[in-house]
Amino acid sequence: MNDIRIALIEDHDLTRVGMRTALQQKPGFRVVGEASNANDGLRLLNMSKPDVAIVDIGLPDMDGIELTRRFKATQADLAETADTKILILTLQDLEETVMAAFAAGADSYCMKDVSLDQLLEALRVTREGNAWIDPAIARIVLTQAKSPQSMVRADATNPDGKPLEAYALTERELEVLQLIVDGHSNASIADKLFITVGTVKTHVRNILNKLCADDRTQAAVRALRTGLVC
Image (cartoon, rainbow, N blue to C red; front, top):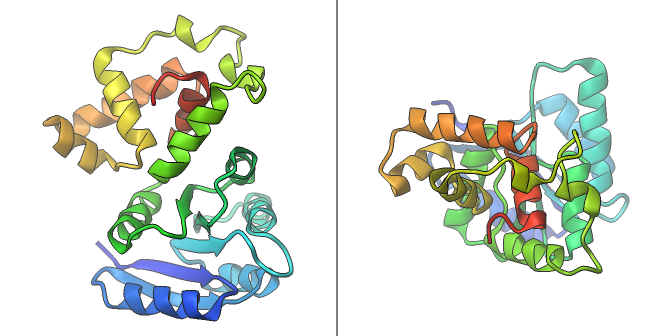
């Protein structure tokens, strides 16, 4: 498989240089460009078309959520065939920030204290088109979702108005869903559950259908907010 082409958009010089150095020392990963602010970052993404962009949420001229929203809108408007994924990197673990990032089109979400091994796994999963949600974020979202004050009732139902409980998942599907929320790829899920990747894909497809979710990210967020998994 080709190297994962990565763009770094981070305003803190030491953090950016540290990530670049660490990533370039690992086989299969290649940093194709860097930017220290959002406007330069948007130009970088449009020019270099990386596989994954690591975007800091606290950029000086425009936050990473707004950058993500604008970039994803540009891709949609131009019907771009190059599908750059956005991995948000942040110190912020507030539920509203996490949900806003995904609403803007972010594909994955990592805390800045993530280990290098976890970051590499997140990049692999994200490049594959799947969501990687930092386990710390998953727990925080679930905790907030169980609070009556923060529960968004619209997320507790599917588009047809039926509650998620009406679409009961099997025990195995719940196991797969939990691993999706924990950020595992299909291959990793197959390894952990001692099943084939093809079987995992079947379970994922069934989960998306039952939750009326368009993708793994949406399924994970709905599952967390409604307490289907923990």
